[in-house]
Image 1 (cartoon, one colour):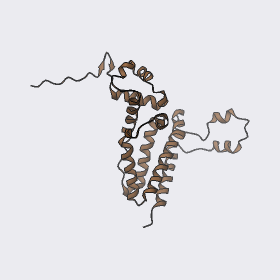
Image 2: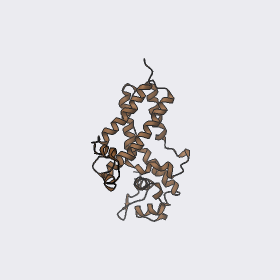
Image 3: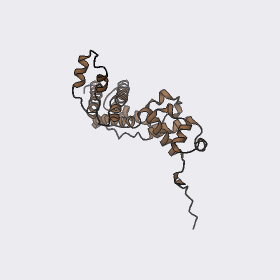
Image 4: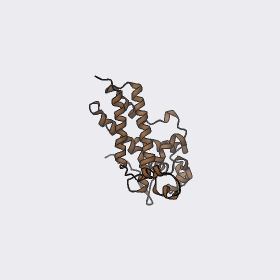
Length: 229
């Protein structure tokens, strides 16, 4: 009987054995919470409770770590299949997948500002999912330039929504995001801003309801660009 190959132990002295996957997960966690600027080899080693030398047994350098983190982020982005017969629902599902991706690691979204990533390092999902969305809009009758414009607008709207609406709501812990934080207004009680105070007192839809409105606006834009049959 052939010998069974020995498996590498999952733990050593009660701690997980260091792997590129573990490094990627922790690097993404740090970048998502603090931004990529905070992701140094020394800080990463401290978070993993290992030495910096131990990290270099698995990665080439800090740029390799950044790439691992970005790959881990985009590997998790898997929109559902998009269908022309139900294109409105497909646009909404694609937007929801973007929102979930961005919302999970908001500060990691600024990688293009924090890091110089070469074109060859672009994750296939970033290209594959864009192609899928553009193909959907072409199949329902939108010209390619208009499809690109719709995707650009959707991406920017979702990104800004996550940073300006979901982010504050998630940090507040109540699932809601006001027009202006109450403590801002209280700190400037003597400021003559009656219209803003009146607007801030109005009830706002929940973030989910606001997101549905955002998606509906993009769907309406796509519908307006379709040629009448």
